[in-house]
Structure formats: C-alpha cells, structure tokens
Amino acid sequence: MGLRGKLGLIFLLVSSLAILVLCVAVYTQAQSSRLDRTRSFADERIQFAADSYDRSGVTVFGSRLDDPDLPPQLREAVLQGKRATFKTGSPNAKMWAAVMVEDGQILSMVQDYETTDDSMKALRQALVLGGIGTVGLLALVSVILAGSLSRRIVAVAGTARRIAAGDLDASAAEAVGKGKDEVQSLATALDTMASSLRGQLEAERRFTADVAHDLRTPVTGLTTAAELLPPGRPSELVRDRAKVLRRLVEDLLEIARFDSGVEQADLELVGLGAFVGSAVGRLRMQQALAPDSVVVHRTAPEVTVSTDSRRIERILANLIVNGLRHGKPPIDITVSGRTVEVVDHGNGYPEELIAEGPRRFRSGMAERGVGHGLGLTIAAGHAKVLGAELTFGQAPGGGALARLVLPPEPGARS
Image (cartoon, one colour):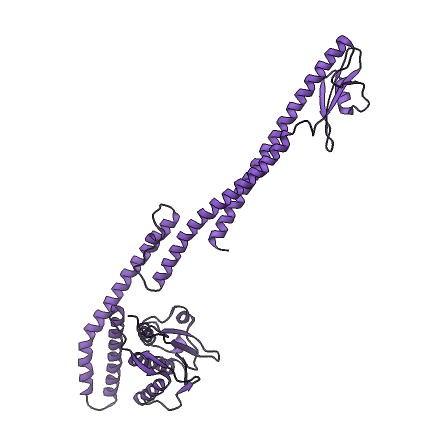
C-alpha cells in the first residue's frame, strides 16, 4: 500500500473512531435524559394518583393497591416511607412508581418503558445515517488531502532520482510548489544538497581538466627525453613509467572532455559481430596477446547498427584490458543482436561497482589488482555518448560480467 492509501486509511480510522465515540456519547446521554424524564413523569402521576385516592378512595391512571407484581426493591423502599420509582431490566422493561397511601396500602402504577418514547428510535436512525454520511465525507476529504501530500512527496522523490541520474539542475522546491510545511522543508534541503554537490562536481571537473592540461606538455617532454636515453635496464624502466604517466594524462583529458559535455558520436552503419571480431584482432596485435586470451562468440545472426565504431572499439579495449589486468584469461566476448558481453574468469567486480557504477580513481577490491579506476569510467563515458547502456555484474559461472546494449534507434546523447 502506498503512502496515499496509508494516510487515507489512518485519517479514515481516526475519524471513524471519533464519530463512533461521539455517537455513543450522544445516544447514552439521550438515554439518560429519557430515563430521567420517564421517572419524573411516573413520579408526578403516582403523586397525583395518591392524592386523588386519599381524597376520594378511587384509583386513577390504572394504579393498583398492593399489586402482587410489585418489584421487591420498590416495595422495600415504599415501606421505608419513600415515594419511589423503579425500572426493570430488558427485555420488556417497565417503569414502576409506588407510594404509601393513608390507609397503609401501597399504591402503584406501571408503564411500558421501551414503547413509551419513539424519539430514541428516530435518534438511533439519525445517528447511524449521520455517522455513515460523515464517515463517507471524511473518507473523501482524507483521500484528497492524502493524495495532495503523496503527490508532493512523489515529486520530491522524482527530483531526487533525476539528481541521482545526473540532472543537478532539477529543483525539488519547484516540483512541490509553494508551502511552509515539512515537505517544503525536505524539498529545500534536497535542493541545497544538489547545489552543494553541483559545486563539488564542478570543482572536481575543473581540477581534472586543469591537471591534465598542465601535465600534458611536461609529460610529452619527459616521454621524448626518455626515448633518448641509452639502452639499458634503467632506461627501460624510465620509458615504461613515462608511458604509464602519458596514458594517465590522456585518460584524464578524455574524462575532462566527457565532463565538459562536448563529445558527440560520429554515427555510421556497422555490422556489430564482424566489427567486434576485427576490433579484438587489432587489440591482440597492439597488446601482443595470445590468440586464446580473448575469444569472440556469436550467438545470433549479424545485426547492423548505427553507431560510432571508434567509441565501440574504445569501450571493448578498456573492458578487455581491465579483464586481463584484474581478472583471469580467457576473456569471453559474446555478441548477440545489439548486445555485447565481456566476461573474465577472475574474482568478479566488487559489489560497490555493480551497485553504483565505475568511479574514477577507485579500482575496487584489492584482489582485483591496483589501478586508477579510469578504464571503466572512460568506457561508461563513451557508452553514454552513444546512448548505450553499460552495466556491470557477476557472470553466472563466476568472474566479472560487463554488458553493453546499443540503442535500437540511431541517435546519441552528449
């Protein structure tokens, strides 16, 4: 049950309980007033009948002398010199009144209590109908009020999801409208958080771009100088570290371009299965990989897609290199329709990466090796530009699974 239903049910139950208590109180008070009126009426009649009997010796109003059916409690009260009334219990409740007359006899009269006043039946009917009508009206009002509150909370939740998806310009306060209640406070707090997050991300983007640009020139010079070193083991180590540093700077520049939002896909028609096979072949040559270290499988007929082949190849290269570096060969690549799956045979991706996606400078579990965490981040950035979906999970047989699903229609997102 959603929040709207729960709030409506709570309002309805509380209001129904309040109406029930009120109706019971009104009916009980009416019964008490009716009993008092009946007692007063019976007392007046028995007093008048006693006066009339003392004067004329004739009973009136159906009164009787020493009635054998007189309740014992009433007889005892009269023998003590009191003029008294007594109501018998249901069913067939009776109202008795009795008094001692001058000749020492007990004069009494009785009347049917349950049928003497039809107003209680009308009151019961009015309370039932009024209670049902009021509950129905309150139910309608509670649903309307709960619906309004629920819609505003849903609007805040929707804005939170948009912020989580990257739309940091979304405003929860505008979504919920004007107001000074707790929902408005929640929306304002969410907007404040988004604004702070937007500032932090912008600072991080500027820092990444500035560092990458500032390092590009000295790293290029360092790489050139390393190539001029005389042959030897120390020179090889310097050249190797210079190349690593150069790749890091290039990765940072690529991420800076993604952050700036200027990247666009260069679409062309590509036979996906054949292209993946040729891209893997080129990667084997570039990385000097063994033929059985990366295996391509096709499980469906060839599909032609409109996409950016350069970005597809970059995504595959990053996923394969990540699997070889942090997992175990062979790397199995399966092409089925518009879907490409890359599976290694290592320990699998960490749960945090599966749940939140790749994050820069976070390589995951220690058992998957060390790294800067930029390879998967770059792959995710290219997939976003293509309008494709790149997800990470655990393979059914163990190991890390990366699944790339290309969009069904030509198009790209920047």
